[in-house]
Length: 382
Image (cartoon, rainbow, N blue to C red; front, top):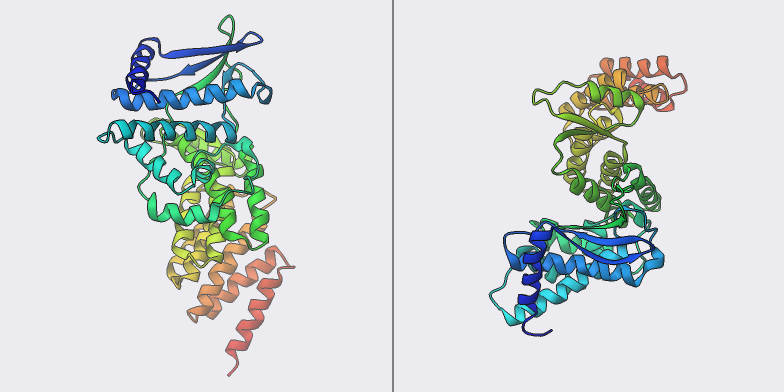
């Protein structure tokens, strides 16, 4: 790179500050534009411009891979990775010319690249629902452990966007993506859980989905909830809020990712981490009894029976109002059985038996409740 490149990039940044966007070549009447909001530090702004230019270059080199519909362009994994690789190389070259240059985000990204984890970084931190399963070559579990020690305070950033624009200033048609597009990735992760590949399920599927939603909604001016059924949607919309903010209700993809991550963490005996994931699920979906019962089970596994019982009681109350006909019986009986287990552990056998018999009244085929009643009978024998 020539010695004047940084000045040249900064000069372009200043020009873009006035124009707020740049235009690339066109394809069948559709132009590729860079939407860019410049930052005060021209050096950082120039780097983000280089990143966006890298995306444009990738698009122009892979025209057949795009639908060219007007609107914001969601990057493919390959496009995002190529752009981050490109900007890291530019940042390295600029640091050679200016050793005092230090932009925190690009310092982190360079360290990631130094450890050959850029692909894993892009998959984990910048995941899009359309990407499908992760490429086999990614060392996602290795990266999960590395980032825990090396990126604990990392803040993921992306500045600017790429847009396909039709002649005549046609409005964008694909700027909004439904959260349901994440669901296939979540259920692919569930299959890994069933196969006992818990760390890979977290690193390759659940964490990327969670990260996607956290980035999307971190600056939301609304209260965001996740509903598991239509009844919950109505409940969240009707919740009162003193701050008068609006409400946005998503499907359960985000909260289910937390739930499934918690399953995996529990299998790995990382109970504190499982508890934290479930608390996030409950915060997103407070009328979902399943999340509360799983949180109560986590307390139970930690030997915190009093907290487990109170949380199962919350799940029982929530099931009465937030569970639909398809899940209410299983949600209630699970909450009762969970309370019963801890009551038996505390020697409160009569209270426990009463709850198990409630399970049988609602579901006479509840084998677990029958088994616990037999266990109580055995404990009462002299």
